[in-house]
Image (cartoon, one colour):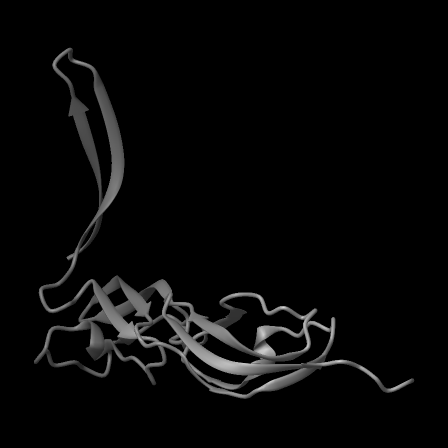
Length: 175
């Protein structure tokens, strides 16, 4: 187990050669090279990177600082763990598969005064950052009620749509 540098030589029929130097990692048989978690997991431990039933000792641990591990951010992070006498680089993959949910409210504005889609959202429930937009831009130059669609999209690409009512009033009160 461990890392070693290797050279790969490619030779074509004409005898031309290209060399590539890379690193080969061989993991101990009880170590998984990666772990995939849903965003928002509470915590991770070295046992999460080990095959089921593997016993750990007090020396087995995650060496990467806890502050450098974000369980709410979609993406990949390489971590250093120690298992037995070997330091291993493993990959933590954070995914987001759940659609965002929200508490939606209706809003009022005045003729010609545009408001962002986020104004219709009181609370968003998701483990990652969420972008809020209109499915179709409302007509802020027309008085009356309009049913609008607010789109929520999280870091994992999951989308939810919600309907709300936009009331556009004519401003008749003098300053």
